[in-house]
Length: 141
Length: 110
Image 1 (cartoon, rainbow over the protein chains, first blue to last red):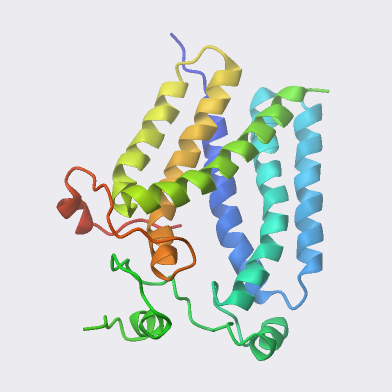
Image 2 (cartoon, each protein chain N blue to C red):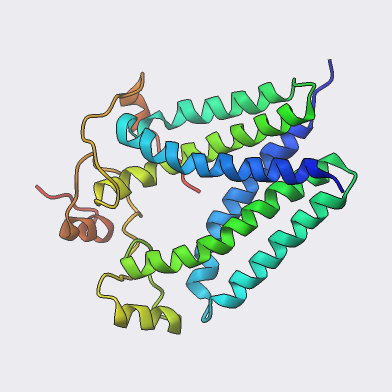
C-alpha cells in the first residue's frame, strides 16, 4: 500500500499557513505605520494563490496554494482585528510606531505590555495583578 | 479549471474557524493541560490520513490534523485570556491523566 502524500502536503500547508500567518500578522501590524497596504497586499497574495490552485493540474500545488491562499485571506482580516486588539490592550502597542503611538494616546485601555507573556495561574486575575505577573512575575498573596 | 485545491482551501478555512471554537470551549471546560493529548491526536490524524486512497479524504485529514496540532499550541494563551476576563473563566476543569507531570512541562506556543 502506497502512502497518499497529499495528506502531508495539506498538513504542512495548513500548519505553516496558520503559524506564519499568526506570527506575520503580529509582526506586520506592530511595525507598519499604515495598515491598509499590508491588508491589500495580503488580500492580493491570497487571491493569486487561489487562482493558481484553480488553474494548476498538479494536485500537490493545488492543495498547498488553496490552503495557504485561504490562510492569507484570513490574515488580511486578522490584520484589522489585531489593530483592535492593540486598542483594547489585548496585544502590546509599539510606541515607536506612529500609528500605535496615536492608539496609545486615544485609547486608555491600550498598553505596551504583552499581558499574555506568562504562565497560567489557574484563577481569575485582576488588572493590577495582570500587570504584576508580566512585569515582576509576582503573584498576589 | 480545477476545483480540488479551491474546495480543500475552503474546507480548511472552515476547519480553522472551528479550531477557534474548540480551543475556546475546550480550554474552558478541560483546561490547557490537555495540550500533549491534542497534539498527539493531531499527529495521529495526519499519519492516519497518509493511508487514505482518496485524495479528498487524505487532504481533509491532513488539514484537520494540522489544525489539532496548532490548537494544542494555542491552549495555554487561551487559558491566560480567560484568567484576564477576556473570555468566560471556569475554575473547575476536567484534568487529563498525568496532569501533575504535564504541569512541569513548558506548554508550547507559536
